[in-house]
Image (cartoon, rainbow, N blue to C red; front, side, top):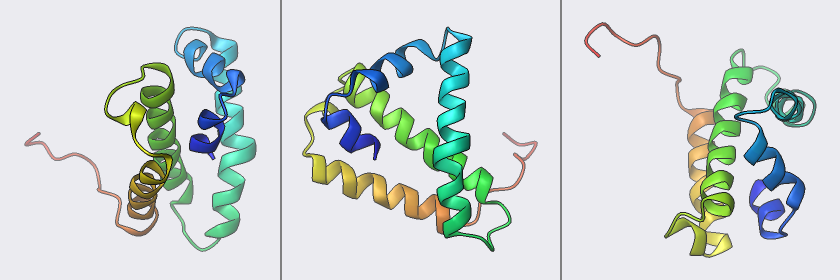
Length: 110
């Protein structure tokens, strides 16, 4: 979804991503996107996954980070990557977040 919105040049996404780090209203709006649009999809798709909220947050962080780097910072080579290549790369990370164990608390050795 974020790749498609970004590719379409949706200014609302750009404005929201630019403003969220420093403006509370934008932060709340982005939290609302997560709470009301993103999270319900994951809860419905994985009803038996007890840590789906955490997993969905990891997926959201990956997609927001990709959108920020690709569309706002225009970080190369991500900015010029083929849309399908971005889809495939993000899909692998999302699959990992949804299917692999989430690490426990950080150890004291870190």
